[in-house]
Amino acid sequence: MSAAEPLLAAHELHKAFGPTPALDGASIEVAAGEVVAVMGPSGSGKSTLLHCLAGVVRPDAGSVRYRGRELTGCSDGELSALRRGEFGFVFQFGQLVPELSCVENVALPLRLDGLGRREAERRARAWLERLEVAELAGKTPGQVSGGEGQRVAVARALAAEPRVVFADEPTGALDSLNGEQVMRLLREAAQESGAAVVLVTHEPRVAAWSDREVVVRDGRTRATAAAGASA
Amino acid sequence: MSIAKTFLGLLEGGPRHGYDLKRAYDERFGHDRPLAYGQVYATLSRLLRHGLVEVDGVEPGGGPERKRYAITDAGVADVDLWLAQPERPEPYLQSTLYAKVVLALLTDRPASEVLDVQRAAHLELMRQLTRRKAGGDLADQLVCDHALFHLEADLRWLELTAARLDQLRGEVVA
Image (cartoon, rainbow over all chains, first blue to last red; front, side, top):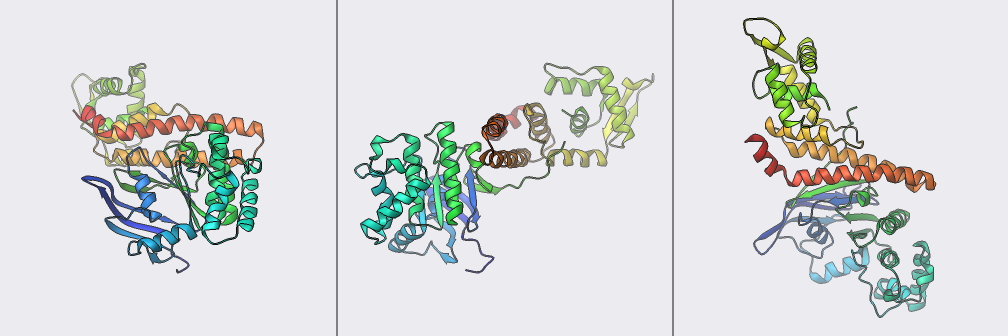
């Protein structure tokens, strides 16, 4: 990957589900360590764009490059390894494993990466502490609030020290105060670990935690830059 | 809201008399606050002085109400600039933004770009406030939150308007 090349870049993505086009020429670039908000109304294609970027969904046409490597030609196994090793995910509902304790949930990606249980849980506890929920370590997801669960989910997303965190409406199920705390912690923790964040949201107050926004409308993207405001 | 810019936008459709301009303005933008004739002619003479409009014809009888005004190239450029530039984000901008969107539709300019440019300006200010809040004390947080919620309301309006542009075009241009 050259110095000028973005960490992650999608170009002219097209994707249809049946007769319905979800992406119709969407493009986006994400630099290392950058927080980019993907905004747009419901059904505009922003989640599909995130899934294509993360190698979860294969586009019908177009290119997705991660660190100079074209992802559209990768096998399912290669994409799966990439997602496990390089990417972290936070969803609207934490999608924590209900049978595992919070510390086990956070340790899970590390265990899948081959780390021993003791070391994985030690690191997981450090992440829970960083996300200001150390006291939840022994509780199961069913025993914690929505806001607490999202902080655990953020800890899990960052535990394996990914280069990119994909967050799809991470505060969508939270009230304003909890949503704000989750965004502050996600932003700070990602920044400290050098991870880029691709943040899908339709909420301006959530997008305000990003460095810049890309707007998706009818499956197409438009990056906007603020010009000087007139008095 | 700038009456002068709005007049220029309305004049792009063709030359008009002052009273005709007032009627068009009141109909589209002045529902609760119709313009006084004094404002109309003061605005037109200022635009004339700056070369943004010119007198297209004078009917017999004299007096300002007999003149017909046309927009000049400089006037069209002035409207271009106004529409391309975002407003300073602050509460209760809707009337100006609404006028910009309607005039963009009336003059066949890309109204979605007016909204995009404004969204970017709003979000940039929201980012600044969010940064200030993250590093501030509770007082800072509360003050910033007040501004953030107002800006967010504007943005919701922008999104809704963007989703209704085709419908609005149908009504405005009809």
